[in-house]
Amino acid sequence: MSKNIVVLPGDGIGTEIVEQAVRVLDCVNEQHGLGISTQTFAFGGASYDQCGEPLTDETLKACQAADAILLGSIGGPQYDAAPRDKRPERGLLRLRSELGLFSNLRPAMLYPELADASSLKPELVAGLDLMILRELTGGIYFGGPRGIETRDGQKVGFNTMVYGENEIRRIAVSGFDIAMQRNKRLCSVDKANVLEVSELWREVVIDVSKDYPAVELTHMYVDNAAMQLVRAPKQFDVIVTSNLFGDILSDAAAMLTGSIGMLPSASLDIHGKGMYEPVHGSAPDIAGTGKANPLATILSVSMMLRYTLKEKKPADQIEQAVAQVISDGVRCADIAGNETAVSTIQMGDAVMTALHNS
Ligand code: NAD
Image (cartoon, rainbow, N blue to C red):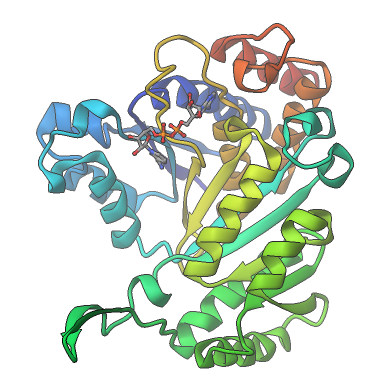
């Protein structure tokens, strides 16, 4: 069956890194006869420059019709002066919300050879491979009532952390499904000792677990989870948590790896359709210099094959090719340390060679 992928290179280094990721996608498509076709659209600042809108109706429609979306990165200082509703970030927020992408997957993985890049001791993080699943469209960021008002003569600010049973159920299902594709261990992070909303969270997660007897479910309070992430992060396989807790924990986990150019991410809808993108931004400071590391975007392609297209073999093959180039000592500037760095294109070439040899 043919699969239609929308490619949104975006701004800054986005075009450079996506070019290499599309080479990799084309390669496994051909090798495995996946029937994938791609269509590229301007998005973010590039779209604003062309059409005056960061997300046009045409691009939105194409994304809605696609099986999956591969995004580079958007933004840049030249758009700071644009009207607020025309800024690249607005286009991204609108796209996520129009597509109902409620489940945000952020792996934190560290190839053993790069363990020195972490701020933690190498033995604590070498070989780290954990997945944080953050609920993305509910919780305290969206709940009401919210606001700032004056009560008894003083200003009071307030937000509401609210989750409906169905919202918890669908992110829990997502968490168990992902755990099934990994090492079958799921840790649900909440604050059930203090918050009623967390009490319900835990109750629903336990209920969903009955459909996944093969997955070992544990629960952890968020304060302990933050501590465990920097004490012994390798104890985790998959963490599932709410919007606020996931926002904080996923950034902490990403930083454990110390290599922003290496981290992919995915945001999925209820049907498993997803948008795949590197965790980092458009890096205007190095755009056009050939220094951008394309591996986060290449690994985003691997996630797309695994989680939306259900093509495990080419997904594994890409991850193995990346592991191979890292073990061969090929490094872009962000992970080179004192070693000689290769360019964006040379890194793409190295992955392509590893793919052809696999
Ligand atoms: P950034 O992630 O773009 O850059 C932070 C630092 O990491 C920079 O020094 C950059 O050179 C480096 N870096 C990032 N990706 C790299 C890569 N692949 N290879 C090598 N080095 C890399 O964050 P920022 O500077 O805070 O933001 C720049 C722009 O990106 C802003 O306009 C911001 O709004 C936007 N942004 C977009 C996204 C997205 O598209 N999803 C995410 C975050 C930030």
